[in-house]
Image (cartoon, rainbow, N blue to C red; front, side):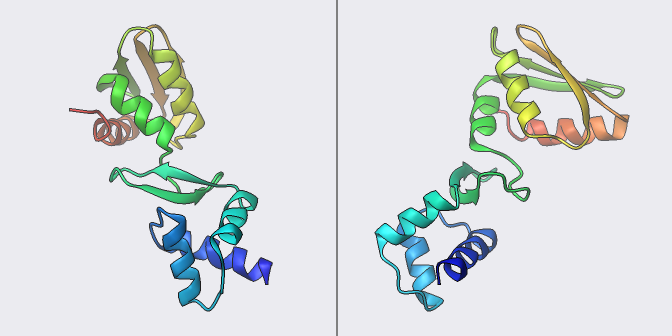
Length: 150
């Protein structure tokens, strides 16, 4: 029963933005699982679920190593609060941050494993991201600009 419940939890959080244990309990009950808050809390711990911040600004449960989660809360928060501008020249993307923050932002970018990024280099307030083509640079700049707090 536990294995089926765990599989159902993973299915639910993959298909829906679930942000509270209470919501997860209700969705499990709708699927025929009679669970308590304590059981769901243990399940969350055993499945190593984390709350991530999506692009839309809402939190939701996700597997810690989920490939379908496109952005982690830590990266989003750090990027949106400290990055001031993003631009590109050819296949190089330049990210400007507050002084002293570039290395932290760069490390969080690296943890995101952006598929188009070949490598990164950070100074005090500037990050250089090298991508394979100018089109990939344009795409990356477009995505990153959406994250900058205005």
